[in-house]
Image (cartoon, rainbow, N blue to C red; front, side, top):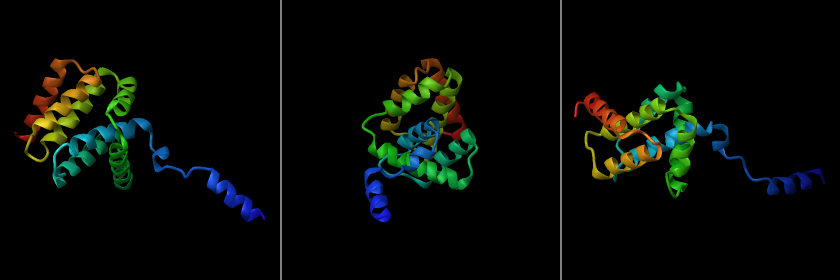
Length: 151
């Protein structure tokens, strides 16, 4: 009888989502970086490595936590219908300097494969606009990322 009740409650309680264990801001930042990575037709190993490196630098996570965060971010991006959920979390939590830093990180991801496409440029412009990053700071972040990439 106890097993029957337990089975009943298990069917009524939704399964735990692994995203529940990740701080929402980390997931939002990871999702924005993944969105840039996925904006090209093909995700290159260099772009994926760049996303992991940016998240490691930003949050200081261990390798297994980074891999889990990227996987969760990829799933969140695939399920999202727009960028607003991700950008609003970052916009509300971070000051202008931090938002400029994440925009620069996204530019580094965009430049990681050595090719900057029109879609990547448009996506970065939209994200920066949603984060309320001043245009001059956006341009300087792009320049710094381009110089770091040697492009």
